[in-house]
Length: 337
Image (cartoon, rainbow, N blue to C red; front, side, top):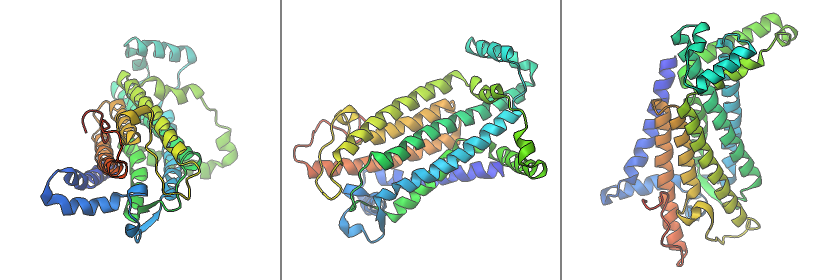
């Protein structure tokens, strides 16, 4: 089951990415295919009214983040409880000694608790917990922005295929961050439910909780995980700023088709800095995982391909819409594309 889920997710990311990569190839022979795919990808200001037959309001973006919040929270809670169950009981002094040893490069302190394999296993489960925490932070901010920041026009639409793609993405992306241990977590969750049925609510609540053990999975994170977290935060902050800029342009424009050229932050360099920030955010996941998890790398590949395609179309729209649009801006990658 575990291997099957990982393989299925990898196959899904490859299948979703390949058509986009083909559409990005600058060839006149592929022009019809490019237009066909762009028809599914267009939304908001770049979607023509004639394409509204199979479309839904763009404000339904909130569905993505509600789904992602519920799903990621469930995965995070289950994975963290599983990590807690696999962590040996340790005293506070030993925990602080473990932190000191880990930060100074030592790793033998946990050899007293179990074998090297089990220690490595616990470390990887802790990594999944941390990645899900980052994803939760991203989703909560996007949910907040979709409610309080973005002012979607009632005329803004997106293709139904794009809507379904969004639902797929926000289901598969959180799962991709913890899929290597999905089978173990699933079995653990079933055992907890069975225990709850046998013991009952009162006896379950009476169980003593060791809060140090809850934090232990985060203590054993590798140095590259913190670098990945820093990259994630860098992209997270800039995406927040760029979305605030876009949101301010849309204030009091619910019933207007007028558009203003955004300015500030990464808009100085590219037309779609919020897409660039999204790529940086998911690059943070790749680095945090040690660049060794193929599923997360394929997830990032889909994010890059999808957003490059959308950014290129947005850039063309800006150039066509505004005669005085800054010519020094690139589509998504500064000084490159």
